[in-house]
Amino acid sequence: MAHIFLPILLFSSIISTNIHACNQIERNSLLSFTLTLSSSPLNWTSSVNCCQWKGMTCNQDGWVTHLHLPSRKSSKDISRGLGECSELRIFRASHNNLSGFLPEDIYNATKLEELALALNSLIGAVSDRIVNLTNLAILDLYYNQLSGVLPLNFGKLSKLKQLNLDFNHLEGALPPSLMNCTNLIEIHLAFNNLEGDISTLNFSKLSELSKIDLMTNEFTGILPISLYSCRSLKAIRFIENYIEGQIQVEILSLKSLSLLSLSGLTNFTGPMKILMRCKSLRTLILSYSFKGEEMPADSGMVDFDGFQNLRYLTLYHCELTGQMPLWLSKLKNLEILSLKGNRITGPIPSYLGTLPKLFCISLASGEFPKELCGLPGLVHEPTAAQVVDDYLELPIFTAAAQNPIFYPRRLSNFAPTIDLSLNHINGRIPLRSEKCVFSTSWILASTTSPATFQAKYPT
Image (cartoon, rainbow, N blue to C red; front, top):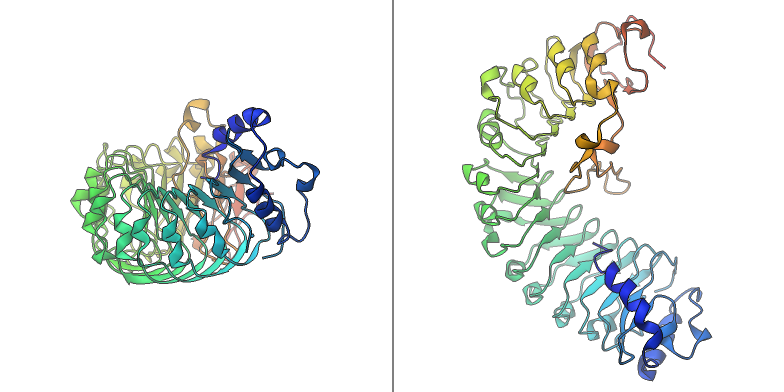
């Protein structure tokens, strides 16, 4: 999101040498702003014309329109000085050491279209005055220490397209007025302390919505049916909340749905029978669902047309019982499979070794079959055709809010892995002479029962 206006910045910088000198009121305001920094790494006082300062872009009339200060490592409280920049449209100061409260006078810059202060240490609440920024299209305050509730009249930001408040300490319910922001394309509110009954919100007005991420909050209720009216949706992630209920067949109307991440589901067969008809579905994460249910083993549960584009399947910590199901053998495009945290018994079926694209696997129990070492995805590098369009719609990361581990955004950048940790796997690991692939990452630690492998761990 932080690079959407890069072409504008580049073009503006080309013509900036021919514009008039900057407005003196704005110049004084910006110099006042530099006093809030721990140092002045920008050397702004070297020129009388602020339109020539580094990180600055002006229009032909000499008004400041863009202020771009990435990774400047400024450490004092970004609290006075910008409100008098009446033409300022883009303000980016992400990835610094900015602290303190959001500057109050930023709400006077009413022509702002983008406010990006991600990856800082800002505290306090988002002021009700943010509704003054009626031209705001991008609000990116990701990874700060913001708290409090979201303004009730948030819906007055009618031009808002991207909202990113991930990794903060926000509380309370989502304001119903947010559903009036009908231009919203992305909503990112993961890893906060937000709560409330999600089913009371009416998403049907958000016809442009493409991504919604509410992961790791305290929302309750059932999966809102109104969400299925958002026909542009590509990614839904509600996992690690207290949301319950079933997936409805109406989800099939989301023709572009690529990533789905939910928890708290029941009746394993029901959701899978519906989801296998989602033709665009590539990433399916149903962790912490189906607690204690028996995994259906019948190969007929998924037909050969089901899950035809599924590439990433996670059923982590579902405590599923039974044996490894035969229907997994039909997932010919599967690349990553995680079944950790289940109580599956019986042997690991050798058919897994025939899945042509599988290269990253995390298993729960059973005897290790040597066929896994012959997986084509482990033996051969992916071809150019295989890595096309393998970009994940949302970043995948661990659930540790303080120090999350981020995984690659492209499936082709995941390390080939056989993960046998936290398991009851028995038997022996195939030796080098049995054609096991030693460029693969092996994770063998933390078994929940004494190791019974009869071969040395491969190096």
